[in-house]
Length: 401
Ligand code: IPM
Ligand code: MG
Image 1 (cartoon, helix red, strand yellow):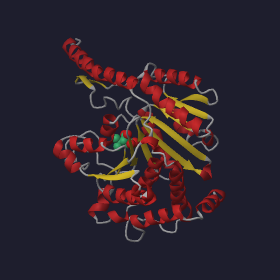
Image 2 (image 1 turned 180 degrees about the vertical axis):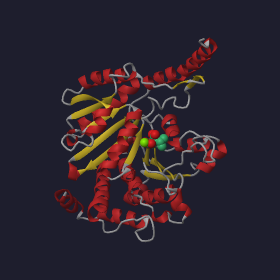
Image 3 (image 1 turned 30 degrees about the horizontal axis):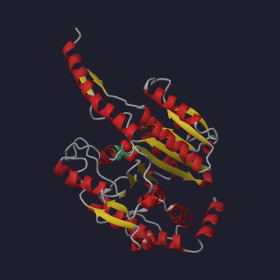
Image 4 (image 1 turned 120 degrees about the horizontal axis):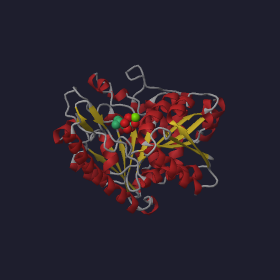
């Protein structure tokens, strides 16, 4: 006997779900162009420590950026603002992924640098809050999750454009238990949402001399939503005649990333949210682990840059926070510099991070007092950016690979 009352309840729930999604589509269609930082004074950079080792490593990354931008700060072109309250204790107190007053402060900044934040899971004693990351992406419409992965010795130089607000994440906590036996979640893909992320990938390719963009879906099976993403890609690609593109399915793409014969051919990728979540962890592992990667969450108005590793609460419990490696969040800081228009400085910072962490390794963290402190790593990196030998050390590193 079919439970028709359950079907009616589900229809009603589904109808309610659609309203904010249709409104969101209209907002995307009406949104302006990317913020032009050249006309903004001061550019306000907020820092959010987060949980666990977050405050310690964020502090080091802020110190690095403040030193590199000292002249700009003195000239009133850039301002740093520390924002408190994005901690699990405060979020639990307010029962919000991002407490209202913290969100207001974040919105008062143009960009933010964020340490890792704890996401509660069933049984850990914290209330069941939405992830602060996901909350921030939605609240600030940070639709592009941009993640670079580079391994020169393997010929790998990838740039991932992961859509960051749609797909299975959009209403991930609003699925329906139709009956005790039937559960349904929803995958959401919109035309303007797909267009803006695919366009960002093609634009990046055009501006950086890349010749191809790879679109990743499972459109052979998930025909309506992934089919739309692929259709939009086809249309966007027509506007970039100088850049070739091809579509791959997520399963074979996951295999090809570890195929030494093929992987170095890929350059720029664009994909829906969940495939990007999985594939960027795989890619980061090839580079040395998620702790080595930085991540940019970009919207046309706001942007947030973050370390993509966890908050390592045990290090704090054992009094070792000062030995945590700040490289990942400093790498996010380099992406921040490039985003706000300090392209050259950001590039130099990236070079220094790689020279110090992958090549010379004059000092290294071990996570305890047997290794360097985060402060020492930061100073090593800043010293390398400032040193006149930066270019020659970089060339040596690339040649040695
Ligand atoms: C990431 C993370 C997040 C995600 C978590 C922390 C919510 O895995 O940034 O990739 O799933 O997007
Ligand atoms: Mg992830």
